[in-house]
Amino acid sequence: MAKKIRTRYAPSPTGKMHVGNLRTALYEYLIAKHEGGDFILRIEDTDQERYVEGALDIIYRTLEEAGLKHDEGPDKDGGYGPYVQSERQNSGIYLEYAKMLIDKGEAYYCFCDKERLDSLKHVVAGKEISIYDKHCLHLSKEEIEEKLNAGVPYVIRQNNPTEGTTTFDDEIYGEITVSNEELDDMILIKSDGYPTYNFANVIDDHLMEITHVVRGNEYISSSPKYQRLYEAFGWEPPKYVHLPLITDENHKKLSKRCGHSSFEDLVEQGFLPEAIVNFIALLGWSPEDNTEIFNLEQLTKMFDYHHINKSPAVFDMVKLRWMNGEYIKAMDNERFYELAEPYLKKVVKRDVDTHKILDLVKTRIEVFPDIEALVDFFEELPDYDIAMYTHKKMKTNSENSLEVLKELLPILEKHDDYSVDSLHDLIMNYISEKGIKNGQGLWPVRTAVSGKQMTPGGAFEIMEILGKEESLRRIRVGIEKLSAS
Image 1 (cartoon, rainbow, N blue to C red):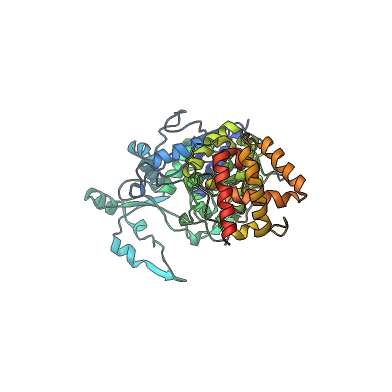
Image 2: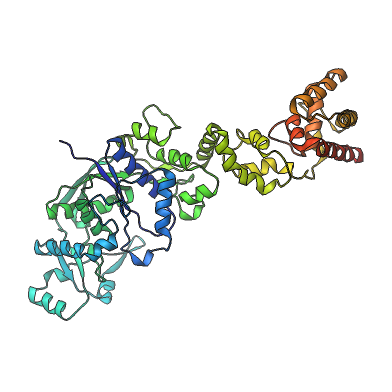
């Protein structure tokens, strides 16, 4: 019988959740849920120097907003806890396993001080590197005991071979073999007694029965060391799934400084969580039928990690904006009003029917902040250039626009029903009687009441929302502007 799939998302509480980390969490969730497995949340907080206050709340909030519900975690014990590394550390579990490796000759105490370690550093191709020379591997039992009893600070290092090769299998990149000469004796237990990220990962993954380890391909170079740890303990390694790099439009690694590298940044910029998840799912994977819009439930059914690409994925902001716009268009009106109204009210303070304005913009925006520039004219008529009255396609210019507005003004002053249908009939009747093209009559009116080149909705919709008094005031402003030119 096949083992139940168990994946884990193991973030460090160091700040906002980067897009790459969210993709890792999403793929781990999908790999587990596609097969009816378990998705585990584990907090890796052993690097106390990088710990950021409030970052734990960000992790929980982001996963919840993204819809990635964990089956086990610090708040849901499934029998494999504790799920916070510092709490596991308190039980002495990591030191215990490190000592097991010492007994097997697969690890050793290292007492070298900073000065000696600094002396091992050298520059290769402009980069400073340091490869430990196994100096402390050759200490006798007596020397080790003496140093331990004297309280000399130490770390515990992995004892990697310097000859031969190490091979591991990756589900995306296939079989990978590296020369053991490249393997440094990485530190397993630091001088403060805490495990390194790499060591704690292996111990926790084994004890939590994790079947698939998903991470960015920058960890491929560390995987031989993980593999050697599994072999040293005699444990079955998990399946490794290394994900392609995410780059910006210039094919450079997506930087935290770019302004849209975290989930929080994107939500603050008006993107919907479900659109972000949909978009991130496609950063390195695509379904067989090339579908682009799908919800999390659909995604779970169609996701097959064997279709993850090796080549870098480009974070295309244009595509994300388009996708977000598609989600907004498909949204039910009540939710749309609720999410969009705060943006509208930033720029429109007057007493108008906000729902009518939002109905005009729903299919015209890609993110909610787009609303502000589209609707600000409802609050106040901008100071526009009369050149806007000239439109070659509509065959309008300042002269005939002035004529249309002057003739329409008294007709509109006598008219009290400012509903769309009533205004439509009134103005279209004037256009028909005058024998001009629709654009020649409508363009001047829309320009006068909006003061904008492009508007959501036409003259009738705008005038209905503005009402009679404000519509007439704006038309009179238009007449004044044109008359003064």
